[in-house]
Length: 302
Image (cartoon, rainbow, N blue to C red; front, side, top):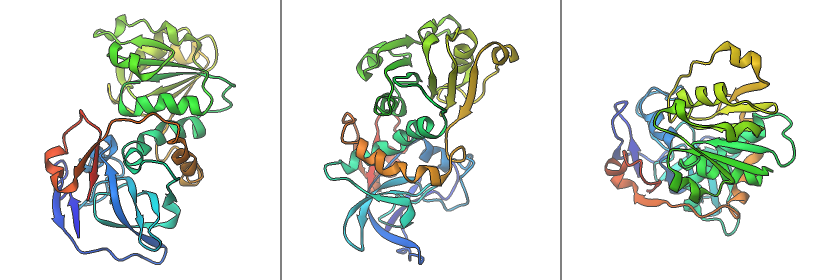
């Protein structure tokens, strides 16, 4: 069979012929149909991610395929890798059947981004009020767009979107906008004053500016999810002393697999109500050509 393999950290994976893997006693063999090229997939392939593991590395943290035992469509999780190959063996606990009517390519492209905001709201917040208000920082990113929809599914009454691109932000479907300026320090973030929760895909100086300058009118729960604008922020201690602010992160490690497992079927079912997002379906044999394509949502098919 064929697989994508990283043999040198940081280099694009190569389309390679490899032996068909044998399942262990608790694994199920799946014929992969599609697997998404997410931000975390590229990060793991650099060797610098905390879960990168050892070489050779097969990218792909999740996907959709047919279970060989009964030919049923299933969504599988293969973190930290393994999805970019023709056949994968996965523990039965790391898969769930796809509901009827759900597009496998939408799931392959967006289940991982959906998981980030879904688990942030389900596992990393505490006692959110009914019809809560959420600020999505980075609302025009792939993860941010679906975070807007996830927030509504999970009970948000108002969604505020933050991005540099006003035109794209208007298409996302938020209730209020914050447009980032080139000079972050001049950005007016006062629209976030009534937020109950912040889902942050930007971090860095943007997060520092928001938390330092907004006069929150209620207790606010800030959840760090991604670092599109930076990996560090300098937050004065006075901010923590002067505001009713809780700071948490969301990602594997901040919540357990046991907490995630019952949420997967709910996430898959929610795809029935999500907007159809753009995906570009590409043969896995062309992985080197498309590995660095960050302008489109790539889904590979073995």
